[in-house]
Image (cartoon, rainbow, N blue to C red):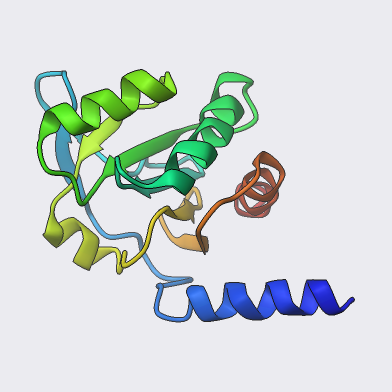
Length: 155
């Protein structure tokens, strides 16, 4: 019981400045290695927007959990947004090394500000109405992501 209490207290502290129960920011960014732009959020379906930095150890270890949920059909969609990178090659290397199949958008400092991202990884669960229903900072298991998503997709 004590461990759960400590975990919940740390999570509350880490997410204290992140938006919740409000519309997701309108974010349209360039795709990595594809022409054109794409919205970070899909209309009408619940999903996850995952912010990462290519140099982040916890991003490398948890993004596979997210990618697997999408591949296995346990999540309608997920978008990965690269932030805090030196150049596009650094993002490409991250994608190649992790082997993820998620769409990767190239974020900016403005993107980080719009979504209140100050640490990596940060992810938001977006409900079918385009509202932020949950958020988390740091490593997350597939089970944790799936649980947060299932609450959003049930509405």
